[in-house]
Amino acid sequence: MNLVTWFDIIVIALVVILGIKGLINGFVKEIFGLIGLIGGVVVASRNATLVGGLISDHIYKLNESSSFFFGFLATLVIFWVVCLVAGNLVSKMLTFSGLGFLDRILGFFVGSAKIFLVFAIFVAIISNINILSQKIEPYFDGSKVYPILLSSGKFIMNVDINQTKQEILDMTGTDNNISDTDNNIKEK
Image (cartoon, rainbow, N blue to C red):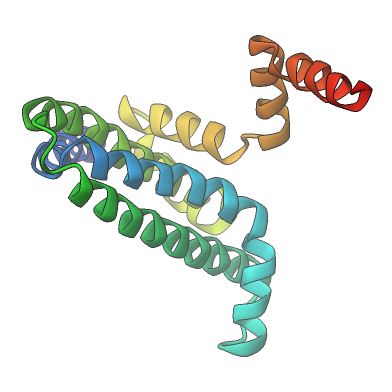
């Protein structure tokens, strides 16, 4: 077996093992963790330069690519922790719901998806750093998991919030309903 096959086995094993953690935590905590992850990536990708600049100015002087990386990482961690705390609060409120079994089963699937997204985002970040990308990509030529992680991570990091919001509004027709309601209120 070559190194790349081991990479695939390790990633898949970690996704399953950490999915079992989702089975233990339950759906609610895992959903809040996933919201923290995806929302954190979106917020971090938009504010990494600003936060990295603040870190570089006030904590430790960094070069431009390191500044972006540490700004991204700091923003992601802060947003994720806030969502985890909120998830714990909601989970404590729902402990007496009687849906514990369903909560646990759904938690496994969400936990697996969440850790897959973590790996995907880190692969995408590392691929954006030229020095690291040039050194590690030759090792992943035969990998089956690496291209999936890379494309998923790049997709998540390039999500345009305003475009996605507009597409959702167009699909549901909510924007038109809001405009009609607003016009009706103005007429009265």
